[in-house]
Amino acid sequence: MPRQKKAKKIFVLDTSVLLYDSEAVKNFEKHDIAIPITVLEELDSFKKGNTVTNLHAREFIRYLDRITDANMIQKWIPLNGKSHGKIRVISDEGSKVNASDVFGSQKNDHRILNSALKLREEEPDKKVTLVSKDINLRLKARALSLDAEDYETIRIKDINHLYRGKTDLKFEDNTHINDLYKKGQIDYDEIDQTNPVSNHYYILKNHSSSALGYYNPASKKVELVKQMNAYGITPRNAEQTFAMHALMNPEVLLATITGAAGTGKTLLALACALEQRSQYRQIYLARPIVPLSNRDLGYLPGDVKSKIDPYMQPLWDNLNIIKNQYKETSKQYKKIDEMVQTEKLSIVPLAYIRGRSLNNVIFIVDEAQNLTPHEIKTIITRAGENTKIIFTGDIFQIDTPYLDAQSNGLSYLVDRMNNNDVYAHINLEKGERSELANLASKFL
Image (spheres, rainbow, N blue to C red):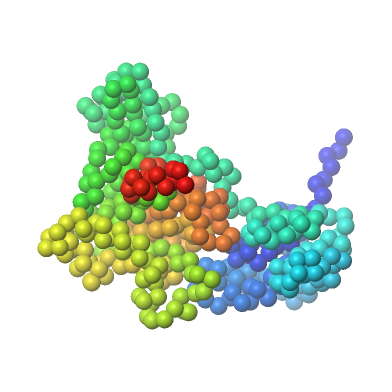
């Protein structure tokens, strides 16, 4: 019996998809792509600026201009190769069901819905599906019996099994633990039979003792991890010890530290950077700016420093915690103030990093869960010689529209990068901010 061909579909792309990934149209295999004219209008309003969103808007507009050439874009135009479908821009919003009437307001979202509904009327033999990163738009589409789905090409399939960076191993006797303490290293196959993961951490336990180790890809051994101190900060649990080890390991050029609020992600990253200050020309600290009411920095009064200071306050708070480990008259306290004044330690907005080459620096990016995969890639590709990049964040605390635990850049990075020799990751589990903070996290 001959195998039946799968019916072609038409995917209608919302603005949010193209602002998230300018190459989205290439990821729908042989199926056709429709772009509502309203989406082009919205992209036009996004094309000016220096954010990754502005970049994606410009990139897609250029791409559409290039592939359509002199053709009328309201007709189906083939995408590259036989394995891809066709693309067109749809301008007819005269569907039988008017979304603006149903929802009682005139909005661009409703015009996009009307375009998709009209296309479905014109193409009854094909399944028309709206693709959007906007949850509310997808819900509205389904309320009108229109198929809708999230854009999932750059998305983690199973967030519950995202790489965590460490494994607990239990033994009946303490032979392996004693050997690890005595020799400083043991053969990997003595403790685990699965394939080793570079820079993976282990908690070895038996009834009476325990030891911390990590798989060193250079020696191909599990080596002892000792507790260390970084600029007055000492780890309070095994995961923090692992994080500090990864951050201080000169062979690890890229590190990610995830965990809920109060687990010590930013504090550990800052302390380890300060401890290694003599090995680098500069320490950069940054965090994504998520403006209120989608207003850009330009709306705020003052110079660049005045604009970004309110967003960067958590970084200053962590810096003050480290400073206050020491007396004001101490060398360590004065050194931090001196580094800030001479800009050896500099807090900057991420927008000012784009286009630069980062040589001989430690670059800490806090709240990295609010970055897209493309933004994460852009930052890492800035790395020059002798540069270490550290991303910290809580993948379940997203402040940016159209991102979630499965599609944000930090989750994507952890999923794609693990088991590389220059990369290490650890997920912090225990809150160390205060007993009160732990109670709130647990019961509220």
